[in-house]
Amino acid sequence: MRVLIQRVSEATVKVDHKVVGQIGHGLLLFVGIEAQDNATDIDWLTTKIAQMRIFADKQGVMNLSLQDINGQALVISQFTLHAQTKRGNRPSYIKAAKPDIAIPLYQQFMDSLQQKIAQPIQQGVFGADMKVALINDGPVTLWLDSQQKE
Image 1 (cartoon, rainbow, N blue to C red):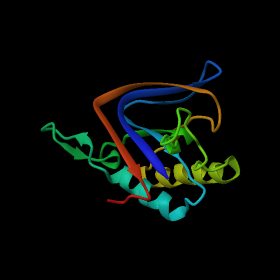
Image 2 (cartoon, one colour; image 1 turned 60 degrees about the vertical axis):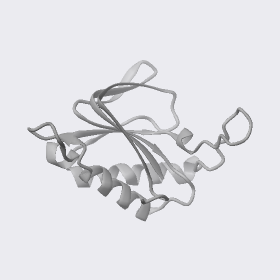
Image 3 (cartoon, helix red, strand yellow; image 1 turned 90 degrees about the horizontal axis):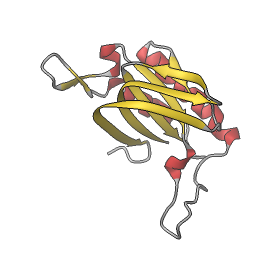
């Protein structure tokens, strides 16, 4: 499971010109799921995301977590995070989980994160054509992969 994390001052996702998810200060999370991902991956990622100290304290040092600031989260499904680009010019998405596997794991990810940050999770619509707008705060953008826990 891969997550692209963007610290934002605000973010919005629209489907068919309607806002379906919106947050203020917090994290925009793009989540890509592979077929072999499981509850262990979800727990590791959501714990890391909730506790990662990437928000500024009063001295301006990144020393506070999403939990510490009572920040919000907007979660967007993004199968393209598993694109293979080694050969040719058209990315292959063969490693991305099919919806019957990905949708339950996506929901489990959001449920787990919601429990850890004690905030409602905003979300996009799985598989929809979404328009995401954000103001990246910092900018701070991080990459987590549950298969590379280095």
